[in-house]
Length: 218
Image (cartoon, rainbow, N blue to C red):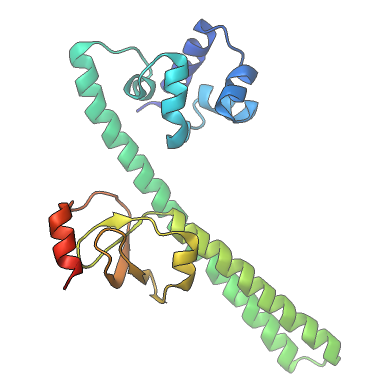
């Protein structure tokens, strides 16, 4: 998948429709800058925008990702290649997000410890000590909220019982006990609570309704 080629194709289709970047941005609910990034190959449209964009431009998602109009056998071959490329891109982005969580928390924890130690051992008036501790607590709260949001957005959780992979809500993750990258969550597929591990890809075993119901009873 060539982002630059896809970008040129978006620009070509937009111009054929007689649209400006501003008009297309308005239709898609994004900024002019976002459309400009698509057309220069700096980024791809979000997954949620791909289908509406393709419908508006009169192309298919497969043609969008291929950066050209496709015919017959070309279409099938390109579909498999594009799906693989998208999966690899999503996996890479998920790993980068999880890595960013580590880079966020490590310095944050160090900074909080430094503030607390300073408040405890430095010769400071009581109000200054209180301020340092309050700043440390605020930093911990902000850092924890940001890290949790990153963890929620990156990858999926896999149910230990039925193997279903899914993305929990922010609040479900907030209240769930956790050990590292494992959380005690209720699976929306089988209804069983278990320690679920974080995984990068969405593919996994798919159970029938009868199988999932049977497992949830045990």
